[in-house]
Length: 293
Image 1 (cartoon, rainbow, N blue to C red):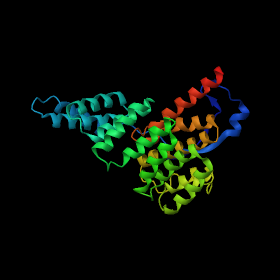
Image 2: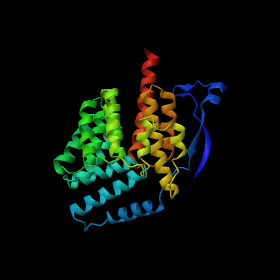
Image 3: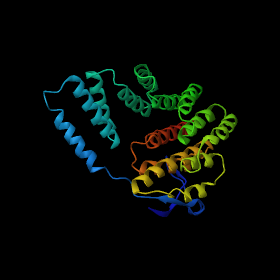
Image 4: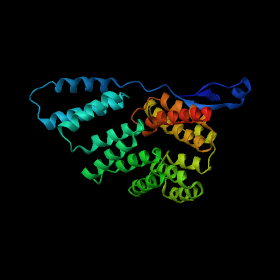
């Protein structure tokens, strides 16, 4: 763990447009750590499950579960194509696996295939109405699919199951802000009352409420961290929500820099890492549309 001076360059995704003056003005102390390396144990587990799948003695349900497990392992390493292949294999063998539909829904959302994503998350809830994270993931799909009112409904249900979870509060705010920014701020203030100051994620909400500055927020990211893995995970979250804040304020250049920092953590399993890449794609599409208009 260390503090580095990272220049937040005004880099356009269409090319470099910054000047030396811009660089000087935009240098901020950004906490930084080395990207997470692939866990050797995970790679060993993938090899072991691959050997097990070669056994002709497996039942259909056993083979489906092995594909499911190996798919999750691939997903944790950022190998989304291999993960999707295994998830589809699992469903062909056993079409009632709620968690597999959930993973596939996320993958469809990331490819901006929103109709398919909605169907997958609906299937999760049909199979298991208590599968809490299907509401989050369907809400995110609806949010990126430009249906924020419906997204808010799912985010509210997700928050209701754990009102003291700052991440749930954050996603509800993100959805509500897309509908009514002023009402969203009031809701965020109200929902923050259930959060504990002893939990780091509450600082994310405080940042959005302007109770701490970005500099103060970044300065305390490493507090209480016990490992490099935990630090990388915390930075992945911090970078993403800072980026979303810049994005909402119309500063796509700084948003893009923080989304890139999110990706640089290599915390592939986190929602924030997954959607940082989609956010960059959306920024790029906006720039291309503006350039051609």
